[in-house]
Amino acid sequence: AVALFAVHGYHQTTMQMIADRAEFSVGFLYKHFKGKEELFQALLELQFQRMDRVLESCRLKDLPPLEAIRHTLEAVCDHFSRHRDFLRMSDLVQEVAPASTRARSVVHVEELRRQLERAKAAGEIQPVDTELLAAAVHGAIAELFRVAGRRGDDASFDLLPSFIFRLMIDPLRA
Image 1 (spheres, rainbow, N blue to C red):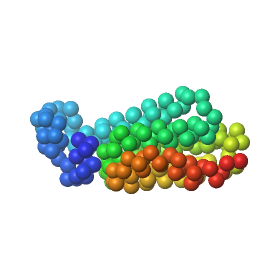
Image 2: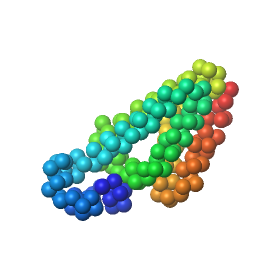
Image 3: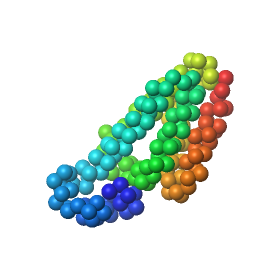
Image 4: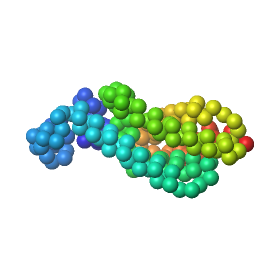
């Protein structure tokens, strides 16, 4: 279903297409989901849960603040390089997902803000508005992921963490 939404978009993807691809009957899908919207929401929830696990595994590592940020960026890039169809679906989130689903990304921005606060408190970066910086970094990453995902360029995913770090974090080193 993710691949179909990514290729055809939300409105053009039908439950019949999803059933055919999954080799299920349409009735089987409707037994588990009320409709396409509920299925789409379940897929988004799965993606958010996966990302939450990636971020949690990064939090559990006892790294200095800037190293933790770099490690998190690398882990997120690695995650999305393995789940490209979700990247291609990301534009649909803004189009069809309810506000409560879109708000889930705020949690990820807040996690980055906390990491930046740790770096600031440790004297690793200059005093800066960490809320604005976190939003800028998150927005840049999201857009770069969309572009790299559309291009299907593996090298782009590998370079994204260092690109973001050099562009947005390194200039703020104390």
